Length: 291
Image (cartoon, rainbow, N blue to C red; front, side, top):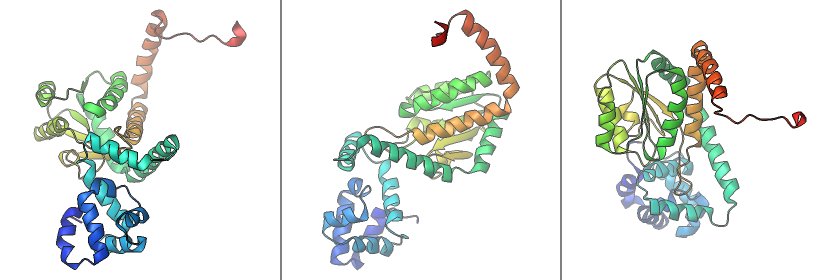
């Protein structure tokens, strides 16, 4: 379905019943809240039955309410301001077990990601990294910790890894100006998508570099400017972005590359272990029975 739900509401407005007009009005005016309501709750809010809400979704062309809700959520995620995120979260979490709800939410995103990540695309992305002359990792704002985490481990495996977490577009281009067709660029961004990351990926791809993106959908601004898209489901539970699933995909990237570079990695860590021991980088644990 190419039209977003607000466009569909306008297109079908003339055919709505009284109850459907109430649903349409509420979605148009409060889509940030409606996107996270169950069919039952949306019905109670506007004064119609749950079955009316379900029929409304089908009449708009969706398979059912869950697919309409998903469409609403995808539409609003890049539009919500920080204040709106807090309001939505407070509405969803009111009276709930916050710890349990957040953990269940993250587990669901992991499940969805496991079903979504294409294994052939994942393997092609790994092969591209292994063949690259240099690896650039782009991730700014809330994606910066992900970029740093990935870069931390890739630096053990490769000698030419560049981590770019500068949020300004000018600074971004200063760091990637030397990228060429022999390089791989791993770009990370989730709603609200970073303009500098998207433009950086677009530039790198235009000059022939291979761009791998980690984002929430192939249709995202970043996904559309990538050669390989690794989809990880990310959503917001509050002001905070849920990055559990993206981090898990990054773990998979690291493990897959490490398996291919086992000898080089073993050599590096043998040297590092001696250095860490000599300079007391880590605390030595003493067994209780040795005291």
